[in-house]
Length: 311
Length: 184
Image (cartoon, rainbow over all chains, first blue to last red; front, side, top):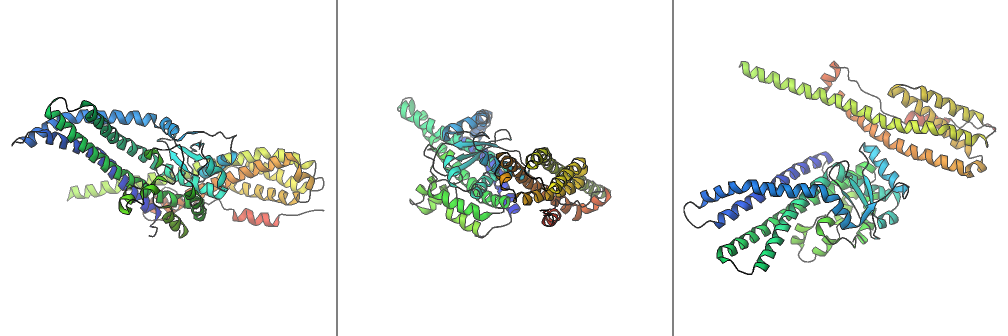
């Protein structure tokens, strides 16, 4: 595997991202239609009736998804901070980190993001946020202590590239979409479990069909999400190399990170994929290589290091 | 036929407008980038009197180094416009470099906490300056590329966009290397 030009890679990925983001609502609406269609009795007017019902339900579906989206959009910062146990770092506490972040930002002319510290000894970092006010780079205490200045600079540059490319915003959007399917599936599972057969065959069938479709949606959207995030890691690595002019520093930082990147507090998969390395990928891999690869949020770290070495 | 011609003219006009806007955007970018540099330059200028004071007490014999710095600072304050400021900053940098060499002969000065702290602050600013310079140079390169490549070079010529200078360290570094004049 060789590097293609950076600007072309950015262009490719931007196109893909837009396509994926358009696909999410289409998948939701497609599944709604399928649900209405399957619920119709078998006769000649099946498709027409289904279309009618579908058109009636579209505003409700769109409004519901929109409402979910707005709530998640405004409250994600706090949710992520809670899930990772990170807290803001003040300039006085750690001048070294501030200088590294600030100098990198000045050198590409971007406004400086907030800096957070994750209180954990292992080595990891992530970027989050959706706008200039909320963009944040979070570093674990372990990564601050165990990497030298050059390595830490390259890691910060990797995260800043995620912010500059607006990867973080896209990732959060996709996490929100996947969350919708996850919520629907879970809600339906509970309905089935607690309603206990009860009110007639039609209801039972409705729930079963809805459950199946929600599962399909969850599966599809998960695959989208993984496709988004893996591409972007290579791009952020390349961006870091151009910002620091020192790809080897990132390679050696990744080597150190790969030894212990598990942030103990973070159990949730959707948060874990935001980090510079996702250790949960490694647990998936042995089961089956192809399926594992499909569900990995990050490319294997050895591959990233090899690419950086030939940069 | 007439409409086809009209459409072609409209498309060309739109293209010209977007190219012109791009040139303006790039020129503004470069000026913004210089504003970042200017902030750091001002901070460094503000620190220099303190530095001179701190050094004076120890360095009795090398007033030329200090007057060089004071003079360079005065002309840097006077400097107007991007090119002048770049030149003045080059002189000041080489004067400071001269001080750094001269300080080597004064272990007491090197050990004084006041001096160490000032030195740290200045090198902090100089790191930021280097970062700002990188951004400025890449903005300048982008502008120069647009000014010199087809088709935007046609509009650039018409509206007075020209190739701008990079923030080059080569000159000031060359000066810095010949500066150390130690009078013992």
